[in-house]
Length: 188
Image 1 (cartoon, rainbow, N blue to C red):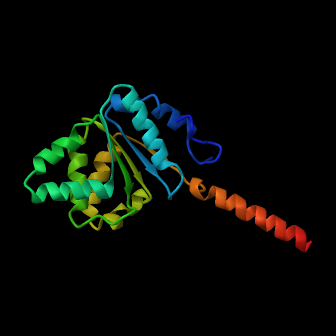
Image 2: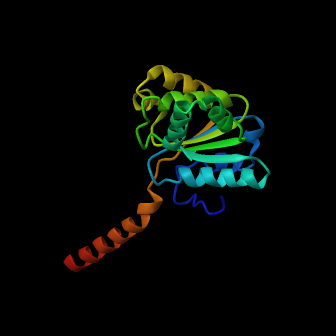
C-alpha cells in the first residue's frame, strides 16, 4: 500500500483506501469493487490489500475472472463442481481480477455468480473491473445473472472508482510531452 502513488491518481478516494487497509471489511464479510480503465492501479491496490490480509493471518486467493471461470468449467466437466465451489468459498478473501477484460465463456458468468453466492455474507471478495456497474448486464450477456451478482456484491461493499491516467503509459506520456516541447521550442 505504501507504494501506491495517490498524487498520480487524484481521483482515488485516499481515505477509503486507507480505511480498507485496516482490513475491517474482512470482519464484516464486506466486498470491495475497484472499477476503472486499465492501468490505474486496481490490481495493485487489490494485491496490497491481499498481502495485508495474508500478513494478518488470513487465507487469501488471487485469480482472474477468466481463470476462475475456466477452473469452474473444467471442474463441472470432471464432476468436481462441489469441490471447486468449496475451494473458492474457503479463503477469507478472494481477489478476482480483470472482470470484463476478456469475454467469459457462456457458463462463465453463471460460475462466477455461484462462487459469489457461496461467499455471500460469509467472506469477502475484491473484484477489479474495467466495466462500469451500469454495463454489467451487457458485459455478461445475461441481465438476470448480472443483477443477482451485483445484488450480493453491493449489499455490503465499498466501491472505489478510479478514473485517471495509466501508470504504465505515464512514462510514455512524459516522453511524448518532452518531445513535443522540444519540437515546439525549435519552431518558435
